[in-house]
Length: 307
Image (tube, rainbow, N blue to C red; front, top):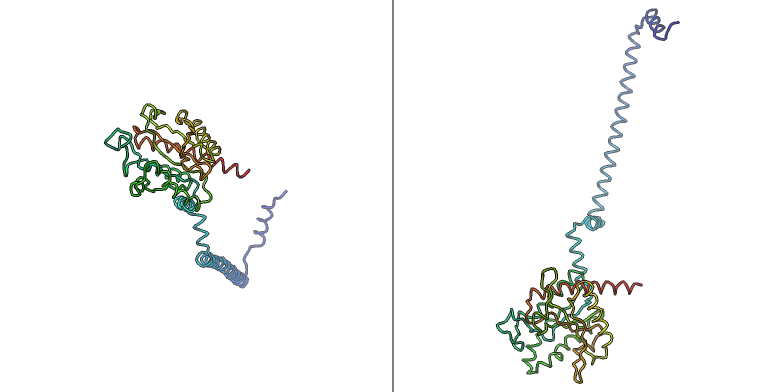
C-alpha cells in the first residue's frame, strides 16, 4: 500500500510544478500588499501603546505636581528619620502630664561642693535641679511631656529676706500657675536629696551604685489619702522592677506639719533621691529608673481610662 509520501512523489513526477510567470508575479504582489498591511497594523499598535504611555505619564506628573500627589508620595514613602521627626513633633504639642519642681532647688552634694556640712551643701548650678532636668529629658524619650520648673527658689528667699522654711510658699506660686494652665497634668513631683550618709542612701544593682528613693507625703493635706495611694503606687512599681531601690513611703504628721503644697493637687509627692554623699552621675542613674516607672504608671492609667 502506498503512503502519502509515495503519492506526493508520484504527483510531482507526473505533473511537474512549473507555475506560469504571471501567477508568480501576481502572488508576489499580493504578498507585498499583505506585508505592508501587517506592517501598518504593527506601527499603529506601537503608536497606540506609546501614546497611552505618554498620556499615563502626563497624568501622573500632573497628579504629582498639581493635585497633591507629591504630599501623598512623601507621606507614604518617608524615611525613618522623617517618621522620627513627626513623632518628636507630636511630643512637642502633647499636653504636659508631669510637673517637676524643687522647693529646695540649690540642694547639692559633697562631690560638687567644698564642704561636708549639711547646712552648707548648696550650689548655684551643680544642684538637685539638674536631676529634675534629667528626669524631664528621660520622660521625653518615653514620649511624655513634662514641665520642669526652673524657678530659683533660694535666690528669691534671699532677695525677699525670707527664711528657708518659706521655700514651699515661694515654690507654691509657679505650681499654682502651672496647674491653672495645664488641666491634663497627672502628677506633681517635688524632688529633693536627703542628708543621710552614703551607706544609708545607696544600693548596688548589678555592680552599679544607685541612690535610693524615699516617697514623702504630708498628712496635713486634705488630699492626703489620694497622695498616699499615689506614693504607694510609685513605691510598688519601683520595688517590682528594682527591689530595695525604694526606701518606702513616709507620712509626715506633726502639729505644725507643712503640706509641701500637696493640698493643691492629688497625686502629689515629695521625693528624696539619694543623699548628700551621692554623686550627680548616680542621681541620674536613679531618675532614669524613675522615668521608666512613671511611663509604665501613665500607660496603665491610660489603659484603665479606655475600659
